[in-house]
Each structure stands twice: as C-alpha cells, then as structure tokens.
Image (spheres, rainbow, N blue to C red):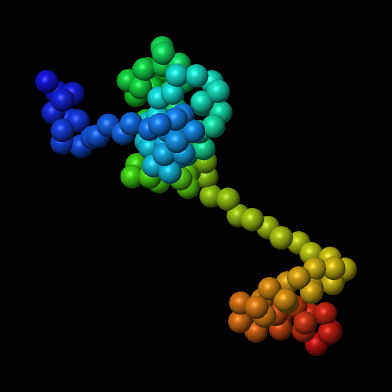
Length: 133
C-alpha cells in the first residue's frame, strides 16, 4: 500500500538499544516531525520541527487541525531553527548604546578579542575613542 511504498522510497526503520540512544539519534537527526509517547521523553527533545506527545497526538492532526505550524524545517534544519512564525515577518534592529565609562569597562575584552581575530582596525577604533583622538 501507500505507506509501504513511501517507506521503501524514502524511509527507514532504525532500532536502538535504549531510549537514551533513541533521543540522541532524534536530536542529531533533527526531524521535521517527531512523535514520542511520554512527557518525560518530550522534555529531552532539543531538535525537532514539530513534536507530537502521547498516543493521541497524531502527526496528521498537526498537519491539518490543531493549529500548529505546518511550515517546518526539513533535512535536519531543526538543529538551528523552528517552524515559520510571525517573527519571520518582523524586521528587528538591534540597538547598542554605550557611555564612555561603559566602553572603558569592556575595552580590554573587546580589544583582546579583536586583536586575537586579527581585526586590528576594530581594536584600534576602541583605543582611538578612549585616547580622545
């Protein structure tokens, strides 16, 4: 049938020796959809596009009826991001404001890191500001 055909074409079955191994594998794979049976297992999941918990939480319900997002990260992208959200359509600008004293307090950290990265002009921009030139 259709399920067997899909499994043969695009799927696989992986048997693990423990739930620890299964959770580690799931987090490494970062699947688009992940179904687990218990809340205890769900708390250990760190990388999944959409997580379905418990025997009644059918994946198809998430696809069509229970309000979760259906635009999900695929191909392991759930390691670094979640599903599409309203935040994806909002442009955020980070704003930084330092006082002279604030820059003085962090100057050693900033210049040390900039120098270590070979960003001489970056480090110099702090030194110049603080020297009054």
